[in-house]
Image (tube, rainbow, N blue to C red; front, side, top):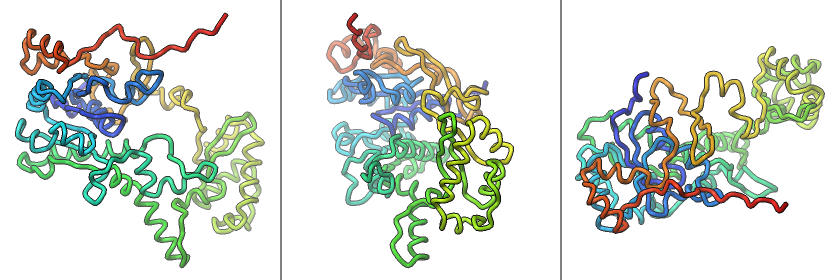
Length: 408
């Protein structure tokens, strides 16, 4: 199999939580050699589950190399300088203040390695809040997503950190664009991307939709997404206690569903406007039709009729689905005595195998190897570790606290 499209490129990731590590994960899947530079305390996601790595770390750090450095020390900064000089891309999501304290700027990176691509994922782009720190739920709250997502009337975050992942994806787009640009195009190689601005772009459809409806109705309108107001669109429970999600966007979708579910044609419900006027009756009709059948029986009829649907799956069942397994769309690996399966980037023609199939690294697992790669001798490496400027891993560390055994 051909190597990934970024084979031979080296990425320095100074990231925590999700946005930058997710971007570096994509770059790794595309074949880049990703070096994850971490402080002695490690990435925050190394300590989120029973004192050990979370799903975020395991899923998005597999195949990377870990160098554990104290960048507050002069020796740590010297190591960083050498690593930058041997890198093609520097990617981080440090706060603006932390980046300044560590001296991690485009100017420094470009001086150490002319032509380098530098990408800083920040909370906010240019503007009055550009020095502020922002996280995924803050982006949701500030861009209209949280307002309409409520639990018991209280605005709530979505759950998955999609805005972080969108920002990571946008960062990859910008990095690939910079790699394609002329070498002297410094403006493209100095990338700053705001989580807030990412959220604005993702919300564009809903923001414009609200503007449209407000002007059509002649009054302020807050409903962001028209799908959620369509009767018959959503999740319904079958007779065997499973949930099926129905897509009911158009009148033809409604007609197909009625044929599949055995609902008699009713001219008073022929158009979406008519069904909206009789929302409660339509919802009851759909609930009753779904409740009268097992999931498998109903799904078979819906498929035959061309009705969009799927089962609402819990996370522990997702990778058991035939579509996920045939062909296999995930990589299986062992890490710290446990078995995992992590979905892959769905671009097989562009991705690489090998490093990306390895488990995530222990904290500092590759520190010595990487120091040797950039010219440090064995004695120098021992001294750096002894002084605390660099740290290596302890393969005997137990990563997670195990639950206490029940009393017999």
